[in-house]
Length: 158
Image 1 (spheres, rainbow, N blue to C red):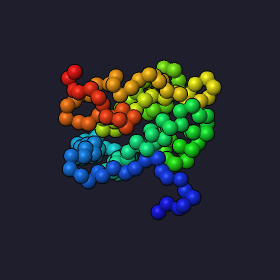
Image 2 (tube, helix red, strand yellow; image 1 turned 30 degrees about the vertical axis):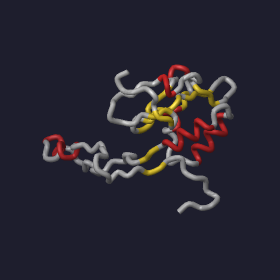
Image 3 (spheres, rainbow, N blue to C red; image 1 turned 90 degrees about the vertical axis):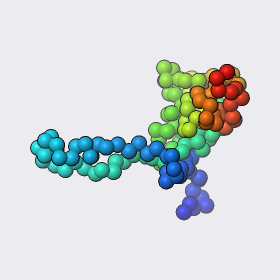
Image 4 (cartoon, helix red, strand yellow; image 1 turned 45 degrees about the horizontal axis):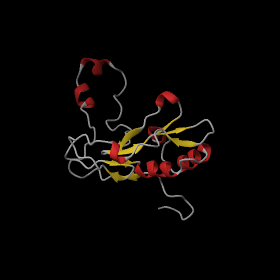
């Protein structure tokens, strides 16, 4: 339960028990069982349940970062890290080096967001401030595609 003084987390849990949710399960342990290499190794194979982070949606983080464009990066970064379970999802959206910059990226389930970077004045900035929802084209006709929370205006195939 969240305390009144604790800020709201910048991620949410996704319903991973619903039908059609892909969990990236593999057959690694099954394939290694009863093999010569497994029998020769002295130790155990380890847990069959890895430390994967499944079922987390970072859309609230991406919206938070978009709302902080133009502000001091150090303050934005420290607030975001304090409200996350781990730091690496920030850098899906924010590029620290020039070669990492991208105009947009796909966050989760055909949800696209503007790419951000830290400028020379240590401020958060948009990689392409002129990119709009009208510029992007859906990759398939069966899904709903969004850009920064707005639905794509172009239809699939056009």
